Amino acid sequence: MTKHVDIDGVRLHLATPDPSRGEWIGQSEVLKQLLACWLTVDDADLPLAPRVTGPPGIGKTTLAMAGARQRHQDLYVYQCTADTRPEDLLVTPVLSDEGRIRYHASPLVTAMITGGICVLDEGNRMNEKSWASLAPLLDHRRYVESIIAGITISAHPDFRCAVTMNEDESTFEIPDYILSRLQPTLSLEHPSREDELAILEYHLPFADVEILNLTVEFLQQAHELKLDFSTRDGINVLRYTLKRLASDPEHPLSRDSAWAEAVIGCLGEDALDLQSLAARKQVSLGGNIVPMGLGDFFFAADDPLHPDADADADDDDDSDEPDEREP
Ligand SMILES: Nc1ncnc2c1ncn2[C@@H]1O[C@H](COP(=O)(O)OP(=O)(O)OP(=O)(O)O)[C@@H](O)[C@H]1O
Ligand SMILES: [Mg+2]
Image (cartoon, rainbow, N blue to C red; front, side, top):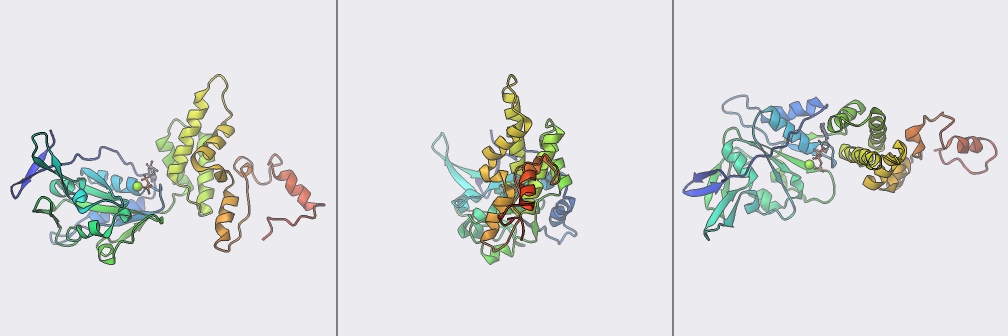
């Protein structure tokens, strides 16, 4: 039986909190900034509803979840989509077994009523009409009006909210009057090498150190080249590599071929040659990048075993071909 509350004679059935345990590793400053947004420094003060922005798979949702956990408050996550309607965000009517209408509070409204934290995930996928229904909640008024249930719902003083937004193109323009209520912006960067290794180790503590390092090296190069491969991509590549290594104990794959297969399976063939991929991306921007291959993950540049070592030596003596690596 779900919990319920009565507001102005209307019974609202509440949502259940999110049970996930979002542990945040590294980048402690941005977590402090998020927690600062949710502080109130005086009885007359109000919390802020920040925007957490960054490319896909970088940890935006995890950060917001970790913030909620640190405050020991229940967490509710609402996944925003392009067709989210105001009633989906607030209160939805559902026909019950007895043929009566039951009103279901959304995760957002449940957090408002119970004093929880709501993460509006991927907020920039949502259209203006739905955002407009949240305008009074996101300023000093701290209430929403459910047209469907015919009630006004005020937020509990402990209610907190954050919105995550992806920096990609499949999104709506959020109107300025809403953006001005979603401040400050906390932008997430890709993690440092040390933090990224700690994140991968945390999620895959059973992975051996070589395979972890190989993946971190790959991710760090991708970040440096401004390619979109994220920590989540690294986690998936690692997971798949480990599964492929374990899948046939009779004829085990070599670690390197399992890893390369996982990169292709998760990220596509182009991902094995990050430098060329970046160079192609740069062409449209008019830039110039040194091409580099899969061998660079396994061998140092001056290693005689490096698959490109001979080619380089040839280039040095009698080849007439212009050296593509020269700017
Ligand atoms: N700092 C971190 N600490 C712990 N885990 C992390 C961290 N950063 C990323 N991760 C892990 O990386 C994966 C992707 O993170 P998350 O889902 O939070 O990204 P996101 O930015 O919300 O992605 P999307 O834009 O696709 O919603 C998750 O498995 C998450 O646990
Ligand atoms: Mg997310």
